[in-house]
Length: 117
Image (cartoon, rainbow, N blue to C red):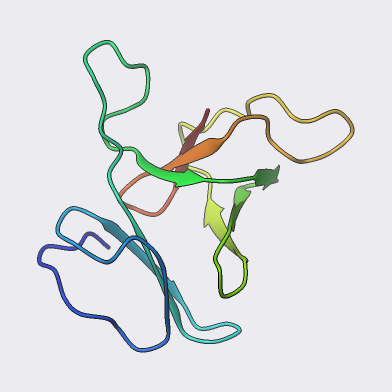
């Protein structure tokens, strides 16, 4: 869900940046209600990263049709499971594992993983 206007804290735990206009909101209920606010990645002309990239930094694993994103948080790290977009192409894996090489994953406005870099 895209934020169209900023609001104050939603009940539960908030991860990432404070929700603001133009951010992508992901939410869940386990193990407690949580909300992750992910900013749109700013890009420059000639940048190979898509313009609709909401950047999630951290480790990631790809298994079947799902990408698992590890988000570090001072109150306890979490993992988000997001579906692969139809355009997803598995990048390089760390030898002998499902862990993806790279430092960030793009998630589109539909909440689908689109690219690992």
